[in-house]
Length: 376
Image (cartoon, rainbow, N blue to C red):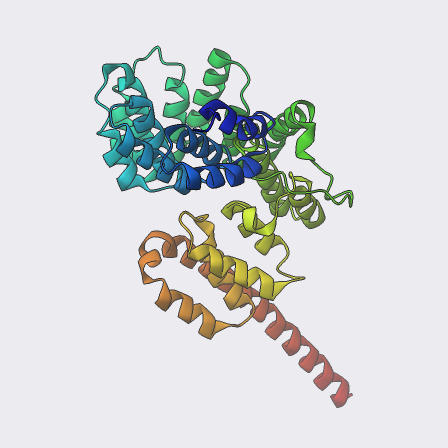
């Protein structure tokens, strides 16, 4: 009989986990799980690592296996439902919440179900669940702010987020929500102020994330998509900063904001970053930009602006046949996204019409001047 205990078997991955080396820990755990199939300790550590790496599909798979081994453990039910929700598998996540019948988890279940409804754009369903929560819940104002924002009531949403920050103290995600409200109201100065707060906190508290190093030309390795990176809200902040600079036509500053964010490899980039990279580098790399936007349309979720922007850019570059193909291949997206796209197309058409009128007038004036010259 081997004298190796379970504790010593997982000692090495535990060290990696403590040091934040989740990828290395995953590799070791996979090897150990081949030796000890469906080990509770191994699967639990593996699920935790995947969750920290934001690989929620694999995390959900681990917790599903753990529930098959230990169906009575309530914590695994919570982690399973949370992982499915984070993976945007909303129907599966909602079904998983029904497994939780312990009164101790009632509040957590309500919050998770409200988040699922919100993710599905079922605002009335989300609001109904939020109203069932305790008014003393510190997340109450934040939840109401999110609902107001989704309804387009940006000023009221901003007030809720500011109140939430007064209650719970400074939090990066709240600072981002406030910045997003100001951005949506086209109040860019206060939006940039809250973005700067997020970036300053990130640089001070997590220098290992390498903010700004890529812009400075320093060759640094990917920091990965860890839960720590998500909690800093740095990626969201830099994307919003890039969007503001782009709106202000400060294109160089917009591109710099994208390279200032913590470095990640191409396959690790989130949909919003990919969308912004495509948009802001379109003049220099149009083929690459179109490929990224087409790729995003196949992802779930993708930034809602993707569909309209792809159509507009195809029209701008006179790829009308490709625009028609996109419409034909993505008929399911037209109901949700095409109206805003057509409004933009109408606006663009109006601008082009005005330009044509001016050019026609200029040609007429030149022709008349030429005719007068010929007469004399």
